[in-house]
Image 1 (spheres, rainbow, N blue to C red):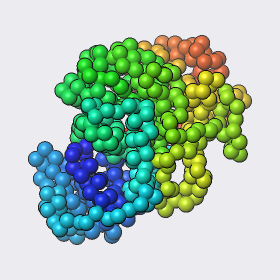
Image 2 (cartoon, rainbow, N blue to C red; image 1 turned 90 degrees about the vertical axis):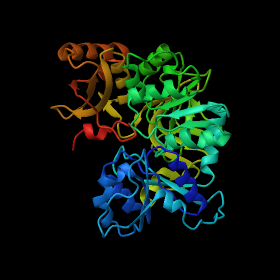
Image 3 (cartoon, rainbow, N blue to C red; image 1 turned 45 degrees about the vertical axis):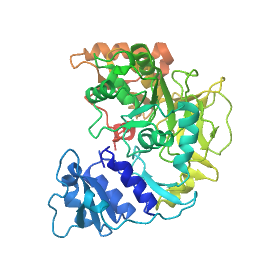
Length: 457
């Protein structure tokens, strides 16, 4: 479903009726959506009318699907024509007017809803979340870090269909009776700035890619167009330090960068108002415990890299139909994130990359995120992604893929300047041996860079 008031009605109504809702990313291809519908064995599909035509050819091939409920958006038809062999189709209004379902009692530890991962490293996995999880994220991050209040107006450019946006745009404002702004359209920089100026939100939730794109807009000014803006938050992937500093300078409202995951439902590691460390993910959110461990699960010392693991009240119950991956990720009380981190001496956590993105250059571990941050410090670079590639001798070296800010940039000059910039800022062995300029980087529909696609087959 697109982001409209029908989304929370469908989500909470399903839970109240004892039905498990599974929000689906609206930006997936029809093939990917069909995969989730088949994998979850969904019996009913609630879909915004503009999204149905692309899905229509896939529906007859889903034997578990019995009913399609179509919600109108901006006057679109509620029941477009479908093949005769397709599941029964009913309009949203007619569906709501049918026999009401009684509220089904449930305990805090029962599975309430699923969320599929964004698939940054392959096919998405369905994480099963419990009834207590949404309240837990509101009581921890929203209340104790964000400090959400009843008089807040929240606009999350991150959509309701994934964990970060679900908390921002639904759970958090509903937990205190605040207001939320929902935009069914794509959150382009122009659309986001229009929302900011029209509704004047006090809290804005975005992702690093969007913050970088907004900074490229000439019209970005104080408060990003909202005189009420008091907090900006970022998650989805780590926020590069140059982007954070430029946003602070342009808007006057610092970004509270944090780390969350589909498996943990929302942010469990974050910067906080008055306690911001640019280039870091901050400190543990109250209610969560963090450790950095080696491959054997032993804690490493401050300053040493390892995998970040987390313990907290919003962890998923496991993956649907993925036992091996469940055992790897959910180990007793601890959830293994797959993210490589280092803890600084002052207790802040610094992101180095996904565990499978790290590369060894000259016998020394190199973080792709660190190299990307150095590249983004150049004024002509809009986006950057770094992966490890073998040279002619079979040795791994960094390769950078860049999206320049201007189409007419002098590519050779830029390559030379960037190699020198990286050597001067973070180390002579970390500079990218190859630099490719491109119009765009492969991303998941939630904005995460898919580095594995850049590494090739």
